Image 1 (tube, helix red, strand yellow):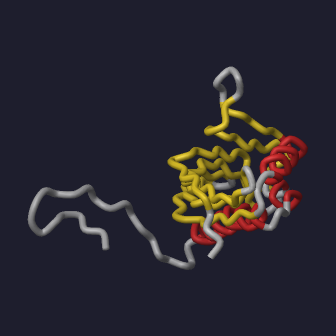
Image 2 (image 1 turned 135 degrees about the vertical axis):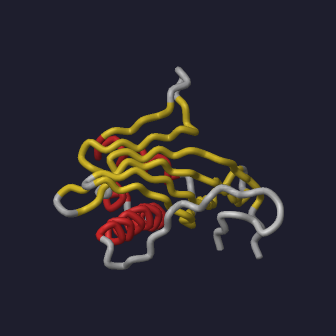
Amino acid sequence: MCLARARTGPAVPACPEVRDDVNDPDTADRLALRRLVDSYASGVDHRDVAGVTGLFTAEGELVAQFHRGEDGIPVVRSGHDDITGALEEGLRRYVATTHVVGGQVVDVDGDKARGETTCLAHHVYERAGERRLLVMAIRYHDDFVRAGGAWRFARRDLHLDWRDDRRLDAS
């Protein structure tokens, strides 16, 4: 529960306005945007590269802020062909992945939206004959556009908050 003021002690910041009107047009957009990010995670986990790529606009961008080029600039993949290649290459090294999508906050403005989504991305891989688990806390910063009645990613920036890499016990 969000309280504007603690009963004892210092005041805490006021809570943002929260609406729960299911008839609000904004609600349908927010649900569609949540479905979009969930579809991205599910598609990656099922290795549906074509399906994930189709969630982006034709000129969409996938930006890995935690992978930098030789010049220190984040790696940017633009357009369906480039995004497809990046996903195929990136997923090839993993035996399995599981993306657990957390909270999402979005601001909708007509046919455009911006948002942030958190995710715990679990990656199983093998190194030197040992099965390992890489868990990454990812914060996606997204720009969305609605085209032809459907929401798509115009730009998806992946930011790494933290990572944990350990031997995976076979239990």
